[in-house]
Image (tube, rainbow, N blue to C red; front, top):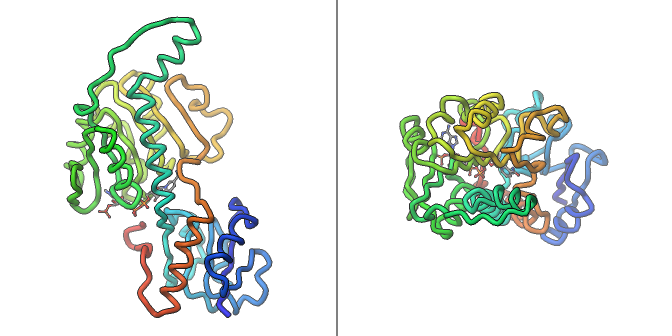
Length: 310
Ligand code: NAP
C-alpha cells in the first residue's frame, strides 16, 4: 500500500487527515512521530520537518511541501540531495494571497488609516482619492501567486507592473525583468507588493537602495518572507517619510519579538503570517494529484529547482 507521512508542527492533523483520506482513500496516511516502519513511507508531506527525519526514510520517493516556499525543507542539513521536492501550488492559496494584497493596497489607496484616526477624534474630513487608472502597483514576483495578484489588481482598475527573473508577457501587465527592470518598475510604483521566493538573490531585496528608488510617499506590502526586507532600512524610510506605510505579514524573526519597533509603529500594519493559509480541503487535491502522477510514472509538476532556490 502507498504510504504518506505527514509532519508539521503547526498544521492540525485533525483537519489534514480527513481531507487527505477523502482525496486518496487508497493511501495510508501516518502522522509524525508515529512513523511505524520507516521503510514503508513513500511520500512525506512536511512543514519544517524535524532535522534528519527525511533522511531516515530509506524508500522515500518525493518530498511534498506544505507551503509554496521550500525554505523550511532546505533548512535540514541532512536533506537527501537526490529527492524531488514538490512545492505547494494551490489555486485557493494564490487566491487568498491575492485577496490580502488587494485589501492592503485598497487600505492605503482609500486612506483608511486617516479616516479611522479622524473618526476616533470626531473629525469629518473629506479627501480626494487618487485616480486608480493612473495609479501604479508593482509586484515583485510573477509566479503562481504574483500572477493571481496581478490579475485581481488589474480587475480593480490599477496600472499593474510585475517583476520576474525571466522576461514575461502577461496580458494587461507591464512586465519587467532583471536589475534594470527592477529599478524602472520601482520608480513608478505607489504600491509595491512582494511575493518573491526567498533565495540568495532575493534576500534583503527591499533595502535602503530599492526603497529610495520608489516615489516619495509610496507603500510596501510584504507577504512573501521576512528575509526580503532589511528592517532597519524600512524603519528609516518610514521614519524619514519617504515610505508612507507598510503592511507586513512576514518577519525576519517569527513570532516577532515583543520589543521589535514594528509592533507599535504608527505607519506599520501587521498580521502574524496569515496572508495565505494552507486550507487542507483544497491543498489535499494538489497532494493527491502529485501522488497519482508519480504512481502513473508521469513527470512531477511544480518541482523545486534546487539550483535557483525556488
Ligand atoms: P513561484 O511560482 O515560484 O514564483 C516566483 C516568482 O518570483 C517567479 O515569477 C520568479 O521569476 C520570481 N523570482 C524568483 N527569483 C527572482 C529574482 N532573483 N529576480 C526576479 N524575480 C525572481 O512562487 P509562488 O508560488 O508565487 O510563491 C512566492 C512566494 O510567496 C513563496 O516562495 C513564499 O515565500 C511566499 N508565500 C507566502 C505566504 C504567506 O502566507 N505569507 C503564503 C504562500 C507563499 P521567474 O518567473 O522568471 O521564474
